View 1 (cartoon, helix red, strand yellow):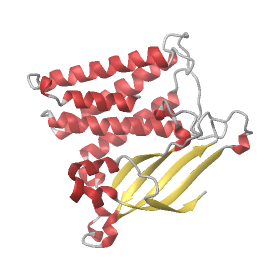
View 2 (cartoon, one colour; view 1 turned 45 degrees about the vertical axis):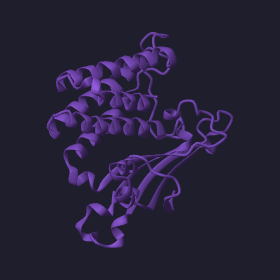
View 3 (cartoon, one colour; view 1 turned 180 degrees about the vertical axis):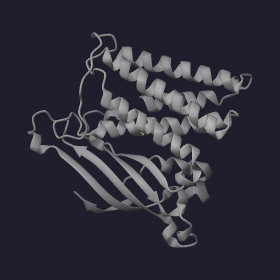
Length: 265
């Protein structure tokens, strides 16, 4: 829901209705709109206000945790994605790249992390310091790559999402961790060593996913946590000559079946 909301607001922010606004007014209105959307969804869907404020300890990647750590990587990725996208939008409005990245970081940290976590504190979920740390790390990664384009040419953070017919949480894909993989990618295209060779289309993956954490009837030993190394094809590099800037989507989304797992544990 949050990713969809941000995408909708980014589209609205680039329409002709905002042409008469200054970049500062656009920034303020966009953040107010995102905050209002989060609160509206939180009160209607996430149970904000149902309980007194409380803090819960969720753990990290333990087998006993609720999602085996995939939710923490989801928090990291969401804030990384929002920071990167808003950074580009703010730069288009006239902010310098450094300022755009800084303001995008403020937006993500204040709205998609702190506001949500405080709201969760007043629901059955509870305020989670682990989530907040993962959020902050995602914002930091987004800021780092937004302000260092040469580093962004070498590194991506992506999510792979492949829902199946037996998915138990298809109505809220942002928390459907059973169908997700999160990964960091090292792209050969970012290194001069591989220029003008076929190797520049290759990339190295380091990924993680958890499975069977949403089945309460299974014993703990039935829960799976997997780290894998893979070799894939850089679809952004491969398809950009044909689809232009739309190829950037593959810097954030990993298309299933476009890589091979060479090691897993």
